[in-house]
Length: 281
Image (cartoon, rainbow, N blue to C red):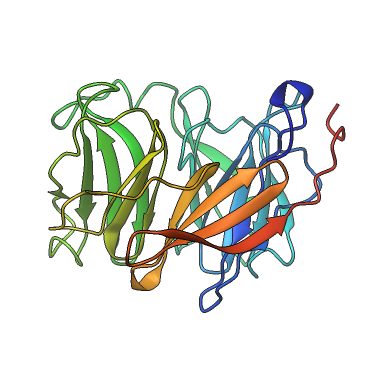
């Protein structure tokens, strides 16, 4: 959000929507310039955020909250996280994984009540080790991988940038065990994927170039093209009950739109972010 990236006036912002609430809240961690981007992971009110390096930094500061962003604790990952979705991942046992810019994977575990953001990091896989391992099947690019108690959800792209998009699910809720994947029929003829995400019940959504968007509600369901998202849409949010919202940005203003059962988008909330222009120059 904000102004021109070339003038260092473009910033990343973090918004949360608490369970049971109809409103989004601005909860961007303070204290670190976030021109380089934010990578978040967590569940419920617990969130950990890594700042991608900018302004000459060569490492990724961390911020962690257990109350949905009301208060933040600080930490450090002494390396830059990769510029890809889900480069930071955590689970219910306070274990965290970080994919780094050089292809390495680091792991941190918290113990004795220590926040994982302050825990020490150790090398789990050397740069290139995962990429050089033998493929288990058809070669595909992983665009999204997320986990939940009900199982894991993934989004793959096959056949290069113009290939099909395939959603996949594994876990007791969808396959009866943890040994195999259930895959969707491919969404073909797609343009460049601008952003993607997951939601309840194994929902997967994608924003595509050309002002297009598609969604699949879970295993056994088909992909469906959505009504063209509102101008400035940077992400969708799949919420419980089949609710779908679009988050659109214009300068320092975030507008939230909701998709009706008739396929129309309508504005439900506007948030103006107090951006400090020139603070990073």
